[in-house]
Image (tube, one colour):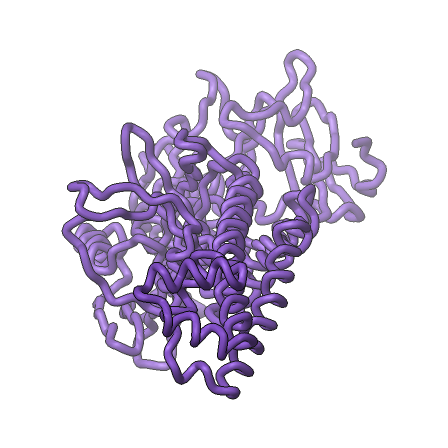
Length: 558
């Protein structure tokens, strides 16, 4: 804003103003016409990409991510050498945004943002789990870019009060001049990884940076991908160096022209002094010098303004040396202006110099982050007892609710069922395991154990029809617990009419909410049971009459 009229600049900030006094950029009047200001800065490095930008103006928003100076310069140098460089090759130099607050960013979204100018990048704070104390703790040392630390702590505290996150006992802000340190002290027995996932899910410890590279190009707003943005800077920088070179060449020629006049005067020193002494005034002396020695008006005036000490032999040598150096400089400047390759070599050299003076190590780590924190990441993995009654009531209960008993124990009640209802199934599995429900119609449904209603040991639970879209007269015959559908193994099916079939477990990896036909049944037949096998087991089928048959599993068709 115009009210900020003065500021002390750092060295790197001064690099944005280098050569501004050499007509490198256009100037315009300031807001009240009292002075002039640059329309754009010469910028020895691409500040827009290195420090980023964010804002809204004239109905358009921009959100440009900051980057590492070393990587940006390396990318610019690569673009100078190969203007047709591919995005993949460019990204070997510019790997992704580098936020001043550090953190971790996911690889997803970076390429799209660089390719189109618009994208979404997931950013996580940096946290570690500390188990050295009496209680486990999560220590956060970096938070996502543009996230307010106080707001983050307040959000976490509110989640603890509302019991959405239950295992945090205390939150401390131990940040100081040495850096950031937020400590989430956990309750005894808490799972730190689970709580950390909850913090990622429900607080700003994980956020999204929406890239929107809208720039003003030729006084018009444009959405630019990374390569085009870098090309715009290089073109600007090349123009700055060309204008600076033209300015320096003009000044060098002007100075050399004056020095030529000095040398002519020194070579004819006695005659020059005599001419000046007999001239009645300055203009007459100047005209006399111009006429007698062929000097220009500027040269003649410079000779008249020369101090007497410059008439010594030592001063003549200095003037000659300066003149020779200027001639070499003029030749160098003319080469830069006359050869585009030389111009780009200067651009590259100055970029490399900025990198060597101001470059630092990357602060933000790039790694693979899951697109989202899933429900499973927020639920502790623990053993559960699943019960299902013949009446269709199902529940899950923590294994810890069932205490071990010694010989002679009287047992405990596992469920409070109706008078005419009894348990038909009991199994043990992890909260993260899948349950497959096979019905008498030959259909199969899938649910996670953590999605079952949790109830106390003696509670009845909820009816399975509240969980699965069963038909009116459809009943669950078998429930199996599966942890990994990629594991080797089979399901062996047996129907009421004696049909036997086996299918690989992996065939049931994708089951939607409406279920899946597990086995095709003939009219009047029903699925009786399903068992998990290893592929080389023996199978025994028994009838109600007590008859049984045994055969190798491999004999069953798939």
